[in-house]
Image (cartoon, rainbow, N blue to C red; front, side):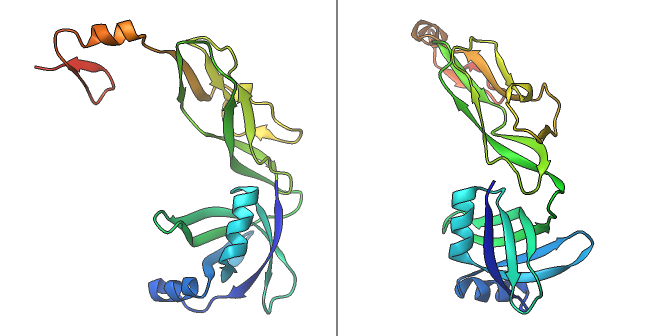
Length: 208
């Protein structure tokens, strides 16, 4: 888990026009809420925020100093809107957290190693929901698929959790499935007598 100190400015302009002007000034429109506090509209420096997310991931805890406010606030990104073309941040929802408090987050899962020959890996989920202390959130999990045969599954129970972290899903929650890959002979046989087309169900159906 990464903790980053960042300064913020109070935001008094709202709506699409105000958000555009905020972004043109090199800032990201954001709202800070939680723990019964009245939502606070702020603007975060774009470069610093982007660098923090790039380095620490989506579960970065920010220590936010708002200009004119007394004391800093700890917050975790709850929802982030991005422009897929410009690759910029459009808006951020931040939820207030407290030291020692447990929160639920989605943590990225990476599969490492190689399964048995002639198999395919079908990813069912690239993240795993867990509950952990706000200041000790895991940044990612690695799960080995080395040597797994067709028919094997990678489940939440296969993830080694650090101390103080608990699953927020059932242990049998499926992250990935190892399936049998078709051989060249099977693929050739599937197309004999006419070209096959892929149906909506994912099964090959013969062309009329």
